[in-house]
Image 1 (tube, one colour):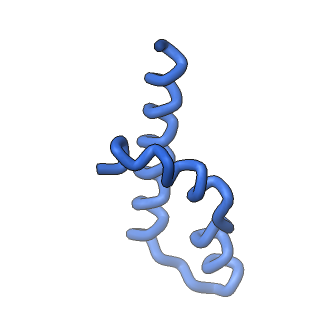
Image 2 (image 1 turned 30 degrees about the vertical axis):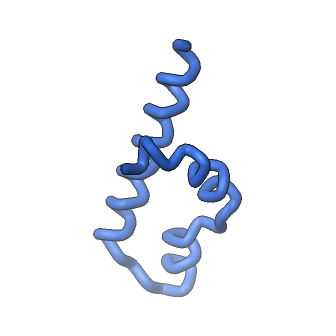
Length: 53
């Protein structure tokens, strides 16, 4: 699903880092941090596959 939403990648890069902001406020959400990491890995794989083309 994320792979198909490549237009969303540009939007996501402009968004503030929600997890970091929440942590600055003292809100620590391990599940959200893990989700952020998975999304970052997916974005990196999209860019890596586009560079090979």
